[in-house]
Image (cartoon, rainbow, N blue to C red):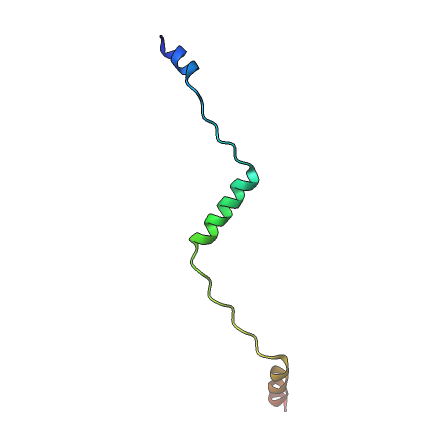
Length: 58
């Protein structure tokens, strides 16, 4: 048996993955590989900021 005949008879494995599944798995891997973000600072209540602005103007 020659090499070309062997290669022709050898079974070929094909994995079928949709583009949506591939992108989802990449996004998931990216999300878990990053360190957690620092929490965003909490804004001061709206009423408190206005009172302080009034004091500065007076």
